[in-house]
Length: 196
Image (tube, rainbow, N blue to C red; front, side, top):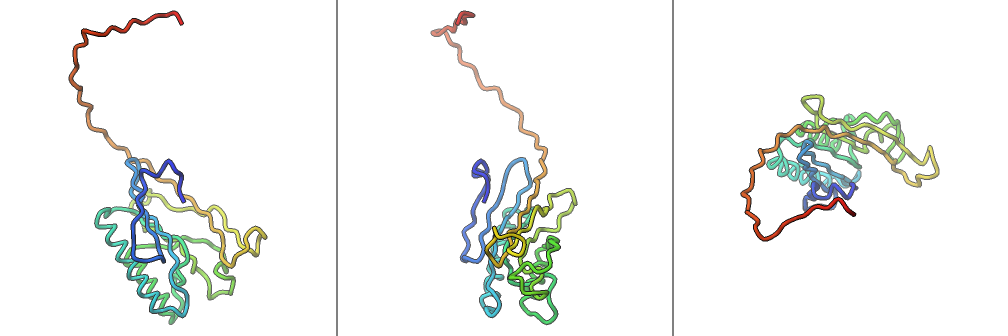
């Protein structure tokens, strides 16, 4: 979701999957950023997981060909832990994917926030972002986490995770304005009057 006034600067990328959706935010006064919502296949669907993560990586690489310096943000349910759990192939594959794209996990510091099933569920709900250099580029910040254990407002086994980030303003110099040619007006006169 985004504010309607940002519509002219948002491009939705069509991908051959319903498991992820990328958009590009390209505003002249801010760095280009790629925002991707994900819901990767769950445990037991390992073939589908491998297929979807390969489609996701290919989509990101295609976008980066047009926007090589774009920042990347992934948000959603990866159904794989980062850092990986020992011996878990899905986790190792997802960790390798993040390393290739230089993605880092946002520290949420919430103990069991995926289905609330214990330590094995740590860090599966992914909020990832490009490791940015220089470090003054925007980082996402955690605003609030709500779960059914804390409030009756959330009736779900997933958390509501609210984050925010502020895009820095890029100073850009506009090209000089060319004076347009003038046309002599000999047929109309404008007479100003102080009377209302």
